[in-house]
Amino acid sequence: MKQGRAGAALIRKLVEDLMGPTCQCGRGKRPKQSFCKECFGMLPKEQQMALYRRIGNGYESAHAAAVSYLKAAGVCQ
Ligand SMILES: [Zn+2]
Image 1 (tube, rainbow, N blue to C red):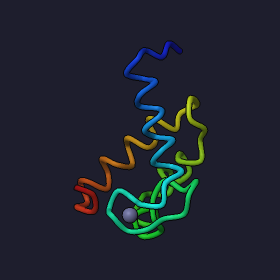
Image 2: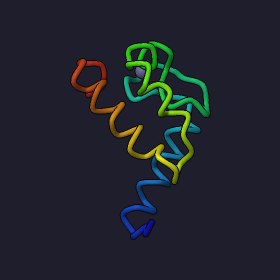
Image 3: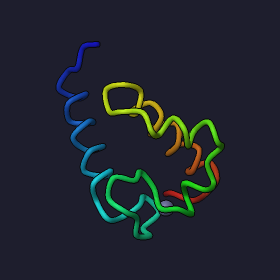
């Protein structure tokens, strides 16, 4: 899979978000977890499972799907 400049920037952002202490919703989360437990708990089971994929191996699309699900649910802005 080719990673362009945009891809590299996206991955850096994903890693920062993943390692950071704040969920997209503004609540605190644990580093290495994509979302706080409230957001994570709202995701369908298969989306929760998909977030255990590695970056470069499906995590990007799993994360994007989870974010749009949470936005649709009104959790994230
Ligand atoms: Zn959250």
